[in-house]
Image (cartoon, rainbow, N blue to C red; front, top):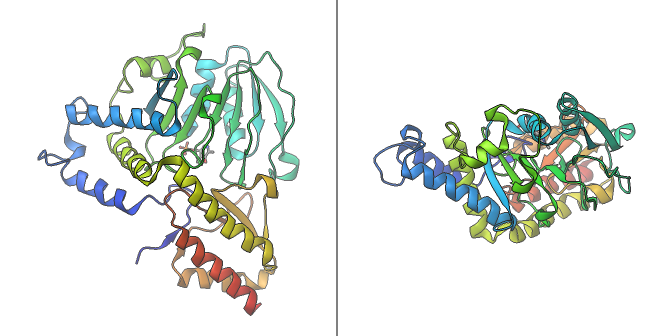
Length: 354
Ligand SMILES: *Cc1c(COP(=O)(O)O)cnc(C)c1O
């Protein structure tokens, strides 16, 4: 039986994508060859890469606005250093909203001065800092739109003339935003877009090519743009499955349609957490993530029973990250509303028993 998959990443993908992806491993679109055994320069794969790049821009509403989409390797973690390599000349600002921001800061420090413009560290990243000042002489300001581990999410982004760089690994394609407010967006595929192995980078072309530092080819966004994201052999399977997932999203009605479903899922679990005395939410209410709901059990004696009930109902992957503890229900695009319903039913059943 297929489980209710609340894993934080890698995580659930649409079932129809799994079926199509597995078929393509055997034979791609009736060509007598597997997706995995054709040249990345073949017309079939070139079309896959072109479609994936243009569909990413289309879904984000960035077509014809001077942006390029790239499918790179090395995960979002590679982008922690690649953004700095390409854009950090002297000084950059970072908002520290948790583990992933901190990792980005650590890498960027190798390339220039880093100003931590705001942080919620003292309260274990329970909230998103707001109303902070942004120095005007920054090369860019780096944000993490959704904090996968702590379950917080920017609802509004700072207005500034400084270029904005955003790590959207765990909420890309999940909600409508004016994506043109960002100069560079990156997202590891394995949370909301596809399997591990590729990272979507969406970059505004006019911020590139201004760096005096020499950049190795593989690290240079301009090289990847010039080579249509095929400077070297791309991760063909990860790109193909990302394309299938984006096509699934488009057929569903795009980001507007999934946003509505994501809000229903989030409302369902957060209202249960609020009303049920057996559970308490971790993140500040106004900053709660629609993707990752973090919560604790208030009565430790009920923990084993809750875990057992979840196991019996086929609920998988809700243990919290070690730096927060408790539970984390990740509700990415492909997670059906029904799965959240099953979890919420168990939570309210536990209250009756308790
Ligand atoms: C998972 C995650 C990362 C790390 O991604 P990798 O592809 O494993 O390097 C970075 N940022 C955020 C917000 C994440 O959720």
